[in-house]
Image (tube, rainbow, N blue to C red; front, side, top):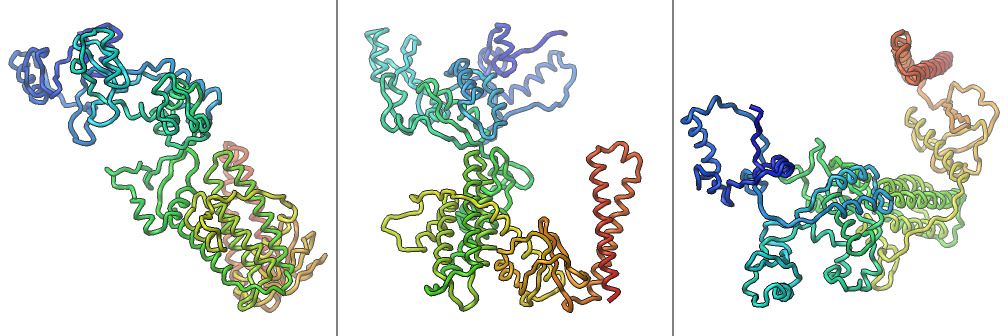
Amino acid sequence: TGCLKVTPAHDAHDYEIGLRHNLPVIDIIDDHGRLNEKAQILVGEDRFAARKKIVGLLEEAGCLEKIEDYTSPVGYSERTDAVIEPKLSAQWFLKMEDLAAKALDEVESGNIKFIPDKYRNIYRHWMENAHDWCISRQLWWGQRIPAYYLPDGQVVVEETPEMALEAARKINPALTAADLRQDDDVLDTWFSSWLWPISVFDPQMPGHPDHKPNRDLAYYYPTNDLVTAPDIIFFWVARMIMAGGEFMDKKPFSNVYFTGIVRDKLGRKMSKTLGNSPDPLVLIEKYGADAVRIGMLLCSSAGNDIFYDESQIEQGRNFCNKIWNSFRLVQGWSVDESLQQSDVNSLSVKWFENKMNQAITIVEDHYAKFRISDALMAIYKLFWDDYCAWYLEAVKPAYGQAIDRATYDATCIFFEKLLKMIHPVMPFISEELWQSMAERPEGATIMFEKTPQAGPVDEDFITAFGMAQEVINTVRGTRQQKNISPKEELQVLFKGDFPMNMTPVVRKLGNVSSIGLTDDFGDTSEGVSALVRTVEMFIPLAGMVNVEEEIRKIEGELEHQRSFLESVRKKLGNESFVAHAPEKVVAMERKKEADSLAKIEAYEKALESLKNR
């Protein structure tokens, strides 16, 4: 027909069309969901009953051609599950054009930074397409709109009923308080929340135009950082920026850090409806509050969603146990004041002090860049790997023996610094252990302690100690592969520039009897060769290895490498693959071929040497 049915009063899109074409707005449904007089037919009928009766009326009039089922987007109330009927009503609006433009400029100019920056695009889209803000709500609770209606329909807006009556009497001196009726609506929640950076310090701002900021507001405003979720960028973040510019003529904060949304393993947002959200109190009861917090934060990078799994909380629990057990270990040591610090203890103390200074610098850099999970992971590794797995093992006295005072004191200082580093996210265990380390003055708390500061770092010393760690790992791996008891001492030879000052560490942690430098390893058939950085290393194993078992292992590895080489060569022999695959991919396959050939050659030599014994 070329005709378009438009109902501006009952459809949001039709309402926009009506505005553009200046169409009359006819509301045919009353507040109870019944047809009103403007409907002209079926007046007083419920909307659902009326729809069915209208079908009958169309049939009777011969105006119904056919009936078809189709899917229509219908909204439902999340509380009552009732069908939501679009309906026009009188509301209060806030004009957004100027406010949105200023709020956008604050972010686009870099005056306010978003972390991560990707959310700036979403913010820009919303600000450039902002509609006027409907600030009234038909609820029975909230901050009531301070609008007062006069008998003739005029409106005055004032802070109190008394002030409203005073303003109304300027229009009509004969009016009394009984003549005024306050609007029944309350303000949108966000209309109160947008004042949060201001009202928490000075509740009188910005209620009174002549009011000066109190001491707290003058000192704390603007704040530094806001931490929030990305789904309320428009609802809260943008509106706080608007309020700051409008009422304080300043930005409310300098940085906005967006957290991710916690989702389940299937990627669904956690909700009561889906029943996929764990009870935090149950998790805290089971694992502890510190474990829950650190477990979640370790996998929470800025702006990225978190796919929750209880194993993350278990990791936090295990970390708490590690911290606690390391404290118990050190507390169980006895100190011999007459003991001199050994070479291995001296080296270990110097190494960990350098590692800690290096880690503090890295952590502070991560915090400055809002890489919270990276900062915590750096502390986690420093505590678990460097302090517990390496440092404590290196300085730990033999069973039943004492430790020297210098090493013990250094160990306690290191542990206290580690507690201070982890305290912001693990406040309970860190406070408990800090209090247990020494007698503290009444009222003292780790919360008031200063964050450890980084000292100088000797990178060469850390590198040298790192080479010793690689040697120790190689020795331990050799014992495991060759089924050699950890109690059996081994020898280690180096060809190259190995830092021999690290030999005390290698001797103790690798259970190595002797370490030497040589230009020629000689017959390497009865031993293990390895490369530590650029230094060649050899572990003699004469008489320690089961030859037949070793031959079987090498033959198995040889078979695996030959099979792998065959698969690589098939790919390289495919002319289509070589011609069309990216150059980097082809180069990678050729490198696999070369590496496999080198391994096969080494295995064949080792096998030949073993069989010729």
